[in-house]
Each structure stands twice: as structure tokens, then as C-alpha cells.
Length: 354
Image (cartoon, rainbow, N blue to C red; front, side, top):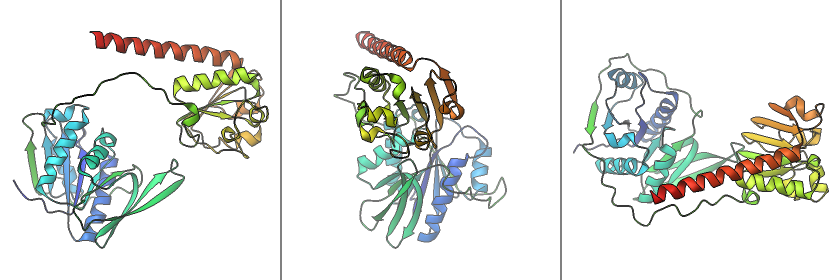
């Protein structure tokens, strides 16, 4: 078995295209920067279920990927992350890199942290910058949905190497080509004749589905937020909104009116005097859209509103606006969510019986 002595390894899925995608090339740029600082090279490792196009290998070499290893095997076609963990762990027996850079590729968010936990390695997800230090590494990662960054320093002089870095896509420029297609380089192909032996799985099974409590989902971290206002009519109407949020795994937000009336807690208020949120989807029920409230949802990706007043200010800023009774829509949505949850639970029971 050959010795891999490069200080930085880049691991990514090979993909099906004739050239590397943007995310893997961003990973190569970061890996090359670290390797230069440590006075060494980068080993690029492509994971593939089957054959890899010759044009893809040539394209990688044109971007400076040398040496290059292609790891092939049918086990890598499965979403089962244990196989990937075992494959990469086996490869670590060939060398002792300081950093294992993982580009944002299929299944990476599942297997990379598990590999780090299994080998007790330092690991950072959503990494936006990595700077080599003498005997160590300084890493920055996104927190609070990109509104802030956390800086971490790692000592790499001991046995806890490599540091596993799962990169946040869009954080680096794509490197320039350093050669022409067809450039010569070192390519090693490793064939996996069978799925890695990851050992039996015992004591694991689905018992029941536990839905998150909407009160425990932070508004600033939630992907889906249901907001309620005066149009819900009463504490009972707002309670129905909470039930719907629980069924959907969403966080609960509120207008100032709902908070002033005691239907919602002050920490749930969204707006200028409350929380600033940026979920993927915000659904506002019975909220007219005063300027104070809209200032808190300026960074929402998709804003959906339900209100009886077609001239409500929120109509002008919504991606989708429904002229309807917010209370009735909440009740219907809650009933549909309950029906789907019961259907999923029933299907799960049938699958266990079968």
C-alpha cells in the first residue's frame, strides 16, 4: 500500500459531469492554500460508485489536482453513510494529513461529522475560512444563519489529526486552470470489491416520531416560521396556530398586537422592537403588516400572508397573498397536518408488521 504524505486531502464525490462542479473546485482552492502554507501538496480523492469519465480526470488535473485518487465501488452508490465513513477511515491508514477538506457534496453533511466523532478528530461544519498556523489551524464558521462568524484554533501537533473541515459553498473563488486538458499527472484507482465491513447494527429501530416543541425552536434559526396577529381573533385562535406549528415542526412568531393582548410571549414578537428573522418561509396569519413588523421580516426568503383585507400593507411585499379568514385557514392547515402525521405513523406501523 502506497504512502500518501500530502498534508492536505480533499475528499469529494466524483459526480457525473465532464468537469468538476463549483463546490469541489472551491474545496480545491482552500486545500491548495493550506498546502502552500504547510509546504506540501494536496491529494484529491474522488468517491464514485462506478466508472469515472476520463474527461473529468483530465479536468481535475488541469486545475492542478495532482496526485489524484479515484475510489470506486458499488457501496458508494448507497446513501448509507457508514460505508463512506469506513472508506475514508481506511484511506487514512495510508497517510497522516493535517487537514481533511470535504467539499459540500452529496451525503457529506452526514458522513464527515460521523467520521470525526468516530476517530475523535476536531471538526468544523459550515467552514468559510481556514488559515494555516505554525503547528495548527485557525478556522471560521458561519453561525446565526450567516449573520456572525465563530473563530476556532486547533493544535495539530498531537495525535488528533486530521482536522475535518466541511466547507460552506460559495465562500471561495474557483481556482484558475494551471494546465491544459490531457496534462500528465499521478492518478491512482482504488477498487472496492465489496461494501466495507462496518459491523452489525444492533439496538436501533424507530420507536415513535417526536415532533419539536415550537417553543424550543429559536426564531432566528428556524427554516419555517408561522406568525400570528390580531386577525386570529382570540387566544384560542393563537393556540390553534401553535398546534399547527408543532405538527409542522415550525417556530412561532407574533405581531406586537398579539403580544400586547397576551396571546404570545414577548420573545416571540417579530419586528423593529422584537426579533429580526430570516427563515426560508414565513407565513403570516392575520397580520396586516405595519412597518414595525415588516422591518423584522425583511430578510425572509419567501413571505406568505393570509388576511381578509386585500389592501393590507403586507400584501404588497408578499410572495403569495391569500384573501381569506386566517382563523379558518389555520384550522384547516392544522387538520391537514394531523392527517398527514397519522398517515405516516400508520404506514410506519404497517411496514414494521410486514
